[in-house]
Image (cartoon, rainbow over all chains, first blue to last red; front, side, top):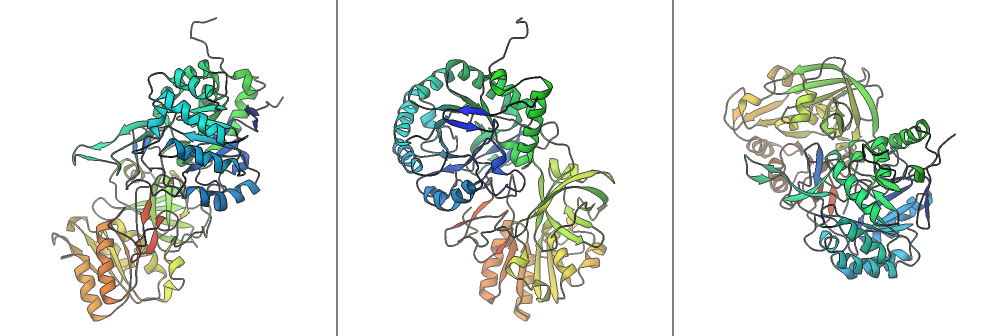
Length: 308
Length: 273
């Protein structure tokens, strides 16, 4: 029997649990020849702000420790161009589209939520965890009370759009942060964003990135991400979307076992733009071979090595 | 202002094979691939992503590496790259064995033909710094000329094999900063300036950013066009990661991987990145 891979994120039904993460899938059509946006459960577009942002100085990306450290700085076209140029062709293809929302102040997030509430985007992802901003971003995600306030304000303005909150990896208590944003009205949480990082050339005594520090993504952060997803999923009843170093269907399955309802694919898309389709096919095969009928039957089934 | 807002060609993902790997000087290799699928690789300045190692995360590096197309022989289904091993990816690529599979994604970006459709019939001054020599061969191979190549290396001992250079570039001036090797001592910009004094021609250049930046005032003072194949660290080469964003003088931004790598050098803001 063919497994049923549909998943539910609040009112939103995704045809499969694979979501293109924000930042690696552009504005949704650049990679369509390799991975059509409508083939995935959803695609989350490049983080979007009220006005266009120029991003950080070059260089913006460098490999390290088997992963990628980036400090793009959320360069983006601004919400106006996003709604008029990026969104219409994507919605015409019947893709499920998430808008990743970024701001420097609490009010930025609320204003964007209000604008996007009137748009055809299917859901919002509040990015309170980007490590590459001087103001805003990560600072909101590091403080559970501020994160809750930001979430409550945005949810109020977002109308009937589901609101996902994207959490950072390095916080004192990920369970508490998860609870606070869900209690504040978020539909779901996604975690983890990149891990704050620094790459140095010791001969020149220079940082590799124009922004000096950046965020580490890719295979090295997967174990860290799994642990945070596991702890967060135990703390909340709402859906958890897991991400961090997913390069294969088995990686995706690990996140589901840890408690994720859906997963996002990020850096793997940069290494191979067709990778989400490979992962999707392999995920169907995995569910079939393991006789798992659906995602909920696998979700949160983690046991210790000596548990019966 | 974005120069080229739409992608005019689709990149092809394919597994090519190593046909030959020929040393072309100290620490410089010509990698010839046998293509499985032909594509529009001819436009000078286009590039491709290469990977001779397995897929991530089992094999490193994580990402493919971008290289300018050196020469294209569609009738033979052969594509050349000029590679100088400087890091992990370039070292692996220049240690390939004949017949090894190479994952190739390309062509990527916008070439010279996007800005000058009749580039084959135009006279050029070609300016190459270091391994920036790569795309110049592609233009010379197709050009009905006349053109003259100004090619410089910091160290004369790094100059490409002279017989090979002569085989594709009938008219060249080679220079090095230390005056060693077969090059004259000096900078390509000095040789170019002397040539511009004699005759004005459009410039097509590829090399380090310092060189490309130095060409803009020179081109302006002689009233000639200056097109450059620029480079930047990039993760995707497909326009999504925005690692290679660059400012234009009007304050707008382009992505070198998609709106370039060949751009009008006079529109680039070389001071600001």
